[in-house]
Length: 147
Image (cartoon, rainbow, N blue to C red; front, side, top):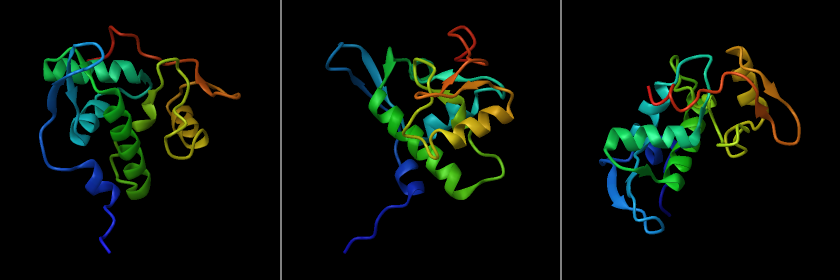
């Protein structure tokens, strides 16, 4: 039986971001790597929160394309969050600073909603708890990120 890949192996596969065309819109699109997602997440300043669409826009600008693949971006963000929680590095990539486009916390990230809420509160970001926890302060607008 084949050995299962670790989260680290899934996130940091070899290769460069792939440039392709979005079949639905015809726009040029980058399919980001785990490294590209991590580097972009690390640019989010403490005390600020970024919508995933702005994260994708930053990666697209970096790659010189019109958009970034939403599916792969979401998968890589989840893998990055899982890796940071598993390994607890001294300088973690701040995955908790990325929220869904409507400002709600992403239910696919580790410890939803408590872990992300705890990390955001530690940075002074207010979170409105409820059926869909939502960030109510610290949300960066399009002019602040990509930075």
